[in-house]
Image (cartoon, rainbow, N blue to C red):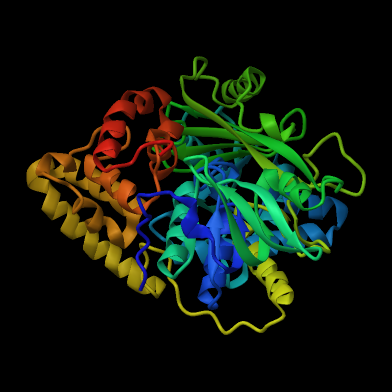
Length: 531
């Protein structure tokens, strides 16, 4: 089996091909497409202008969910599109919870109300949500009275009852990375930090692309089919093929804050069903703190990742409304990310009612573009794109070979059993050095990030001290940084601290403190930004 360790030399000349498939964009959909293609025997190159998952795929609300908001839209409009999207997303939620149980887990959320009729309305709607999940159900919704709500969310404004339901919570950036690693392990060539600057055509058909390496050199890559999976940048890639194409996407900015206060101490999140301007807002447990987020603010693509003071004030206002005892919430991190929404038939001024559907477009020149969608349904989008690739190739692909995500076993039960045994071994190994609490904390962190590969991470330590946590917020170790440098395509401290480890998304100041120690470790591993 090929190794997924990336080469130290980023020279683009090794990319020349030819390949059956060149995928532009190493976010969730592009990485999943690369994996599904190599599982079926295609030769694949996966490239991204930035780091893996550096855009939308690392900036979600961290929920694997069917979309309660879309279910309500279906109720109000009798819309089949919304129901189809919810059913599809719920099935995919179940898939990922089984495939990567160390990265994804069940999360209970409260839909609150003070009105008995509203509670009944929510109970009916969430009962349908459970039914749509079918065999992939992860727990039935239930009514919660004020006493239970107060126990689960003690700082919530008193007097609320509501309905409790289940969805999934996951580490979006690490799942994206491990999908890419799995694709590489099965033969895909994966190159982040390698932008496409030109699409090549011969006799009116795409035949490859021009890529720019980290050292500024350019090379031509031959490919039988090119797929555009560039997320919010997909329109720009489409125009490399045909400059006059109209836009297909509207970008919606999602704004998120992390609060030092743990407002969800029992592990139950809060869904605010409708804000004053009709948005949905989440308050979720997140690394012992609270993640507050909302979406659906239309913006230019260039501004999608820029948190705004207005957005922060908006979120903090709702924190104070719902948690009146927290009048001075302490923000430890803030971020924003763009969502690529398919434009409706006529341009809309609001994105709140735009269903997160997707489309696979085939241009006359052969460019296949995957447009729109959401994290939870990236596998569905990838498979539809692969069907378009198959049509462009004019051949039938074989059945896919097994390719469990790196860190998982072939079967879900084997993964669960293996994780339990590994947790015990790791804790015993680390206990003498770190003490019981330290050993348990580091073991939990390693398992949650690397699954069954956690022991391989510790093996990267050059001496015992490199197994000691560098931070009390998230127990990142020098051994783990070395593992990331050797196996996870990191180029600089931001890759480590923002996406391979979520520290920058939890505590910006703590991530800033660790930049220089991480940089020194990367230097020792021969990793130099811009090299």
